[in-house]
Image 1 (tube, rainbow, N blue to C red):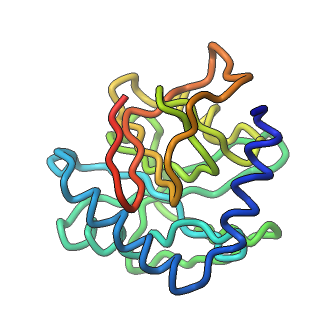
Image 2 (tube, one colour):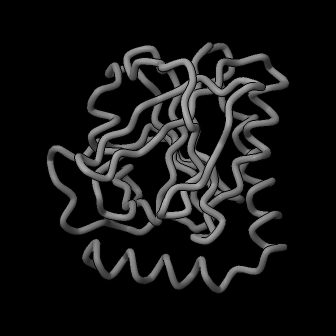
Length: 187
């Protein structure tokens, strides 16, 4: 399938999920993450859930990170140049939804991409060799390209891998792991 076809497929599959399924699957994904050997790092980047898109609820992962006293980094999107600015999440961070319903920090302590050690990535789909499909604007491609090569890239998906994503580009940055409610995939 093409990226366009896959985006349509996974958006439809997501829309068919109930609130209860999203909650159960999101908790299962968080529990799967606990099995990974990723908890000795300091700086973890995570996305805040776009509820209207029925994304993985990252509240469970945020609780794990807080409980382990990790530095949690969240982003603000710039839709003019499709870049992201990263901020440390603190008790004083004010969050507001932007025009695309993305919860974002209003301001805060800026963190450079080069400081990030683990990045949890929202996606629509992925394949068996770590290619991923997002919403198509390239925010995460640009962002991941600015991270250190050793930064762990972990996709979070409600659904299992496709056999192959056609149109994957040589410059596309692959995942190191993808976590679903039932499986941990390492690439």
